[in-house]
Length: 153
Image 1 (cartoon, rainbow, N blue to C red):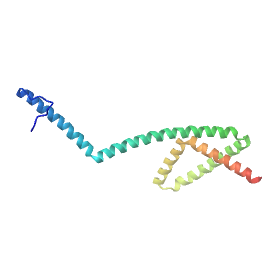
Image 2 (cartoon, rainbow, N blue to C red):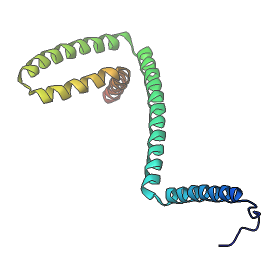
Image 3 (tube, rainbow, N blue to C red):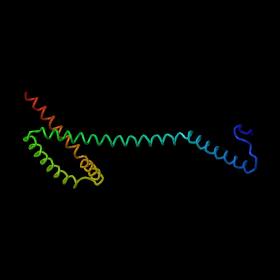
Image 4 (tube, rainbow, N blue to C red):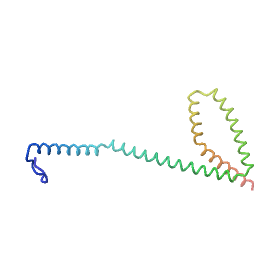
């Protein structure tokens, strides 16, 4: 083996041991770095994890924006609706709630437990996203009223 030109030769056995130990350390780091570069699966997993975190953050950001926009749209629609329409919508909502309660009680008596569990989960999601559902419902009612009004002309 040849000595590197930039390192002086060791003048004592102790210096030689230190140089050998330093060289072993550097060689170990180099081998670890090369192994990491050739481990395609680990690199792919790291990239997938990073992408998943970025996507989750972006989804959370967009969800927040959608909720804000939906709330703004719901308030805008409610402000522009005439009182008779609001009253009819409230009455219809009460009727739907009553019918849903009746259907729910009848359904609970007849549905198997796994189906009831899934339905409970779906209802919880709907409760958690109530603002979005109200906004979408309000927009649908306004659109229906506008189309109905155009049809009469």
